[in-house]
Amino acid sequence: MANMRFAVGLGRFIPLLGYHHVLMILIAIAIILLSLLLAGCSSSSPLIPGIFLISMYYRSYPPTFDPAQVDPGVTTAVANIVGQAQLEVRVGYFGICINPDGGAFLCSNNASSLATQVSVDQDPLNLIWVASTFKDSIVFPYLIIVAIILAFICFILLATFPGWHEETDDQGSERDVKPFPSRPVSQVALALIFIASVFVLVSVLWQHTASVAASTIAQDLGNGSVRSGVGTSAMILGWFGFALLIIVTIGLLIMILSISILAQLTDDG
Image (cartoon, rainbow, N blue to C red; front, side, top):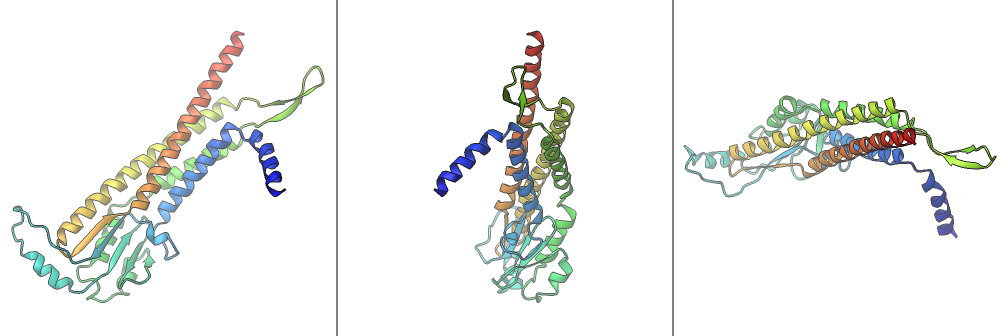
């Protein structure tokens, strides 16, 4: 009986779901993904420390030797300095998380307060300071913030599109009618979501390139004692958010062109 009621309710709801409602759902999902990306490493809440741009941690491993190294023996000196340290540092857009001894993460947007939580033996190479420099000098979250605002405005504009409603024709019978959305509103929504998509693309490319470069340099400098990596979850959130905004942009463009063609055919008829 419950399944039957659900099926009946769903059957009544689906006809009311318009094309613009699908676009609104995609925009909402994109906003959620990008917001999670910005929230990475901002608190110690569950899952939040797992969203990071770059991580650096002490780990002993066989160093890489190359003819371009003037002093290959420096790896031994670095290993002696690092000792038994096992601290891990993760960097997000608005915060830094540290794990001094393999336990829970401590997160803050103030690197100085995090540095007071660990001893010299736990962070002998100042990875917390390196992470803070990366966050303050390289990470730029404001393009994503502007993109989220523009996408939300587009969401509001799409919500103004007319839906299905009943009208009485000349014969007195009722029929379902859905008027065309306003062309200027549609064009403004298209422009906003396109600009948001460009901003997200630039920001994600910036984020990806900067994170990979910083990760490679940090690991090379700590050759044999420091490992570094790029946050997969942050990359997925960023690229998925961009993909959804592009889908909405293409969807809006197709809708505007379709309405334009249909209007021309109606006028010609």
